[in-house]
Length: 348
Image 1: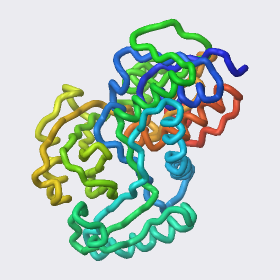
Image 2: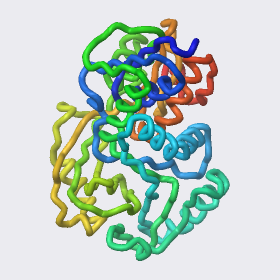
Image 3: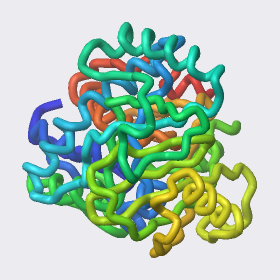
Image 4: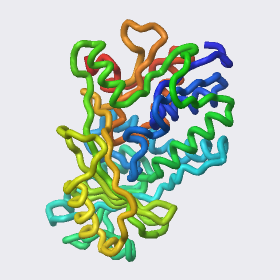
């Protein structure tokens, strides 16, 4: 495609916004159409943990995610430079308590895998929990896994930052409906998966509800924490995001219930510094999960000029920088660098 031509992105979640930004940065006229509001689905959440898969049993999916996480700092800095809005990104690292003595040997083995697969810039190491001060997790062994690759971003601020960047680069962000111009990237989350299920006559994806919360506690620039499914992410605005549930069956996609209260209680037990922190918001919505368990990327079969960008599930913010580059390469230059397992046909 010639630079300066129109391209349309449908969907105001992190995948759609990141693709719109990347296309605008490359000189395209971008029209991003969001029917409801920016971050109306899973991208409007509260947690924002950007963390890697474990570094063992390395594969194309883990390599793609690793490269995207490495890109994240420069990506969000460039977004801020373009639109003058900060996404709240920081590479703060992550702590995972080692609950049992048997876990020490596994953590040591994975430290070697990280050294091999991540290279020297980022660490996966065993450390004493006392190194991390007041905002540290309870660890039965007194030890934690500390990785320096993980980062955080405030989901809603990230959405606002991408909108500002797209508009500053000459793009349009339209709430409601509008005419499509040029090739169309469909980054429409759960609604998009449901449309694909109907179009292909088989389930290619589904939704998984997640509940999370925001607590009022200013922890400073300290590592985020993960243990037994509970995420605890301190943000720069003096709050902490905690989550989340994973519900395959639900009746109300945006209601919270006792399952979230259990997550909050577990977060307080995991991080004693949160014991008296006020809950300032409870949140719930549905995350799009492709049948392949990876992002679903590529040309829409049978629809020339249409492309699918979906299935971010729990790792959308971490994957978005690399997803945007790969999709821009495909749409603009016909360069297909989508890894095996991420393709639309992997779900068919």
